[in-house]
Length: 322
Length: 309
Image 1: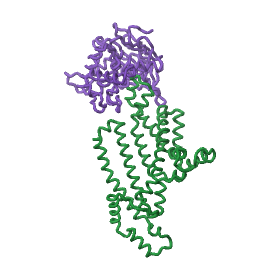
Image 2: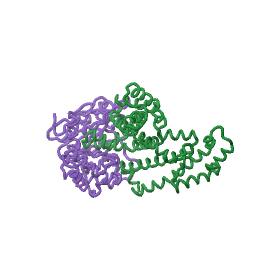
Image 3: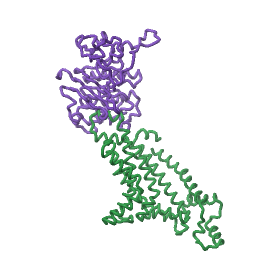
Image 4: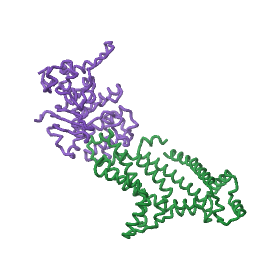
């Protein structure tokens, strides 16, 4: 079942949230693979289930209201969902680390940044507090912050600097996999480029794999090896980056590409995908995209499409390619 | 920080002057003449008039006020009691240790029972523990202190004979009053800790720490509680200030000669100097407690400390 050559392999992952009397199908039967040293771009609209998938891998789904209903998450060949709390704690941070979306709210406001990095190190390594602080200072310099600022608190840093601290925390124990959840969404465009460049170079330096959650196809083109397009809790297209950008298959993927504005052209109205993302408490029958799909077939509203390999390393869930 | 403290100490002056002025005015417009009360029912108008002259009560209001201020500032003298003829300071200093010990002990009871209860309630929100303790806290807040005090006396002093029913000199005699008066603090602190913790538990940075692989107990104490402390410290400070003003009901039930009883007795006999002196001392203490609370804020939250310049 599990694939040894993959670092991470997710099978049939289903995650629900209960809100009031409704069940939100946040992640629905999701499959995903990630090889050693690869960077996977995880693309989709807000609410597609990207963050939930990430938290599912980390075992951090808030329960209640969230619950992993079904599936397996193989990491280095072992199913993380079967791990005990204690085992999972030693994986979090050490093996899989996460960089969060909003640096403004993701750091403890009453602890200085040096201590926050050192905390990560001391959880996973048996070293003294002073040694951990020394290592924390080295990490700060690695992400481009002077080490004499380690005694400063988060409110004394700018957004971009805070995200660098977040990156330093994530990399502190040299994890095998980093999950970066929209790490640049909350930042200015110029700072975005710096932070991305930093992440890219550190990822190469430490030889880690990375899942980059984003809705920016430009970022994906810049640093990812593989891309998974997510729609309504499911991966609809999964491919090598080049193959996807040269030959996008799924109508949703095409819609995403068409909605990127062209800087050369003068248009009155930007291209959009018609309609709204479906209500996750009441997903459409069959292919979840069919109500918005310009190429929908009669079968699309009846059956769920299977994963089809169209080219090597290029999979799509769509009846057009059956 | 030092500059901040000095500036805050300067602010004490207008606050305390204001307190003195308000109390002075209130006593002045209260019906009842101290001279008449001192001389009793059968006093002649002439003797009352003579005594008023002697006590300086005939002078205009503002003149009386400035004489009081002059004595206070230049001679550090807050007067002589009309009733006991003893210096006011002596009566107040006699009561203060009791009030101080009672306030401190019941705050202590509140902290050691209230805060842990609040923490567990927050971490196990909607559990049986949470529901039961929050109902108990509501009862604790609603139950009059004197009633709880009487119940405690009936059980522990009368029935079981374990603890004394009155006095406040030995450790044993301190237990019942502290529990009775502290029960409100326990309930208040538990509710405040719970609601403050619940707000922090859902913050993004708590998730960040969980993503580091930190143990839940460490997350709760070192991060969630630490970030929840500001409202808890605030309410502890407010409660401590209130208790320093004397806890009349508890003092009456357990026959403790505290400042609450001194004040009420003095108001009844129109013993103006004692009332004024008492309010002055209480106001100074409340100011000091507030200052200490503000200083603690700075240590708990670096964002507040950075404003203390």
